[in-house]
Image 1 (cartoon, one colour):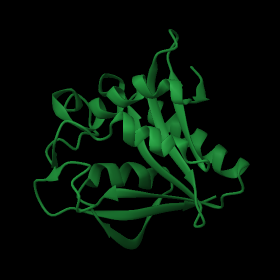
Image 2 (cartoon, one colour; image 1 turned 120 degrees about the vertical axis):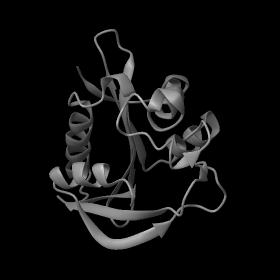
Image 3 (cartoon, helix red, strand yellow; image 1 turned 45 degrees about the vertical axis):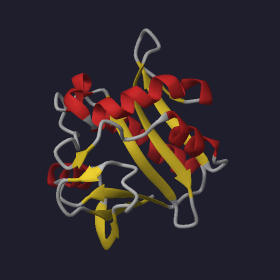
Length: 170
């Protein structure tokens, strides 16, 4: 099943997929849920994703099944530091089946093709299982942290939350 570049036309399918992987009851069927850490049903919405995808340095890769349904995605943004990777998403019912790894490998290929010598990301620091998963893929914590945005656009935290910055040199 291929990893392809998503387009603006895919937003209507991407938004519910992303939200299902991060928030609400559906997310609890997978291991990547943030539902216990952030109150709110939405990780993103049409306006936010449209804005992100309108950035000329940004790309969303999508993983489609045999029926061309999007079952995974990742947001990539070429920045001065390197390639920012965010919103890695796999349908909760299909997690732990290798789709996330394929999206990560495709992201690394994208980084190399675009002369990005580093991929970096923000990971909620208390998500130890997720940090460990990225570490198994060669990413490491830089020691840098970043606060959760105070405007609650990603949900209302149930405890103090900060992001650990992780990266991998290409």
